Image 1 (cartoon, rainbow over the protein chains, first blue to last red):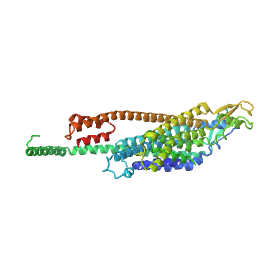
Image 2: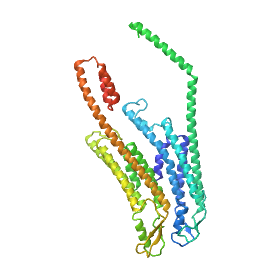
Image 3: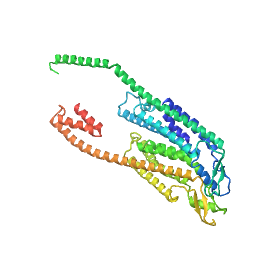
Image 4: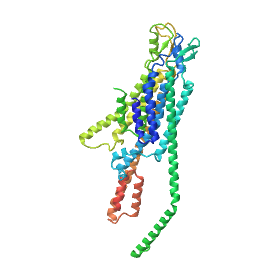
Length: 261
Length: 268
């Protein structure tokens, strides 16, 4: 079980996403998951082994490492990626539920004119309308919240996004203020800034997608009200014509049968 | 054999689960299995190497580590995952057994995947109860073994061959505490989902039984009236009173198809 399984889950949502959503999924998997798996885990692999403090006091290194790195960077990124991808599962569940209901109606004989068979229902691309629009929009909103929260947690935990090469530590059982040295601080800083930038890009994509969805709905609604406003005389004329036709046909029938309607 | 095997086994359960069961599966896959594999396993990777006691006495560290961690938290997590997923296999085995019987008798038992009738309902219910039992059992075991869900940074140890009470320092205690709390929260969520699913199944069955009894009693009285109609009214059609009764049946009874047919034949 690894990132490939998450990719399978999320990849299924790709079909029903907007174009911006598809770009977002690509950025997530290429610039964040792949970088995490291929590079970051190698860089952070020996983080505790090569964390060295200028003291022979047993336990001082452990305590200082725990104080400066309560959660490792790569674990925090892994959690961030999992939480950020999870709202897309809501959309996947909604689409699965919609397809299940459609298949049930098809079996009862209700939607035979819309679909040829059950396979057709599975292949159909579900449009982002109605309740699915709300699910999709909520999932984007939660994504933005999770991204922002994790970026803030990062900033708060590590006092910024830069890793220093030396840290001063005076926590018990360290006998005095000792120097502790982090392994590969520059390489770690480079990867941290890369991952933060990728997070920012993903967040901007989510904001753009949210604005696009909201604008689309507003535009659709204004178009509908406009068509109703432009053609009210036509609809009124048509309904009056229908009434006249009904009256003529009724009077004609009555003339044939001899009974009043 | 790896976690992929468990994933493939559980995917088969998905077809015969309720909606809440599918949510439970998604939570287990994403928040427990995936988090375990990509993050938690690595946190406990070097736990014994980095476990340090403030003493040079050989063997003291080994004995103290063994005393504080009779079983590693991450291994307990993996065991919990396996035990909690196993009851779902009962459902898979049950369906496989019935499908084998169907082939022999050439008769279809389950109309569509996702329909839970008869024996499968009982198997599913038992698997839910066992799952919940395992979840609660493992949480209690965790709490009892490690005196709570936190990991301290320092432990005092005076077991032989340690010469006196020595300080022993655990590696990454904060990160371990965070992941254990995460595990506990997700376990509690899974327990809540199991309880909701259990109540939903039991309530649905009770409602179905009550409705079936009610519709049976109505049908038996309708059959009597039907026989009466052919005796008294002949083929002219139903009297208005009987038509209204049948239209009520069509709207309120769950056996709509049956009652609809009744309504149609009487009109025709």
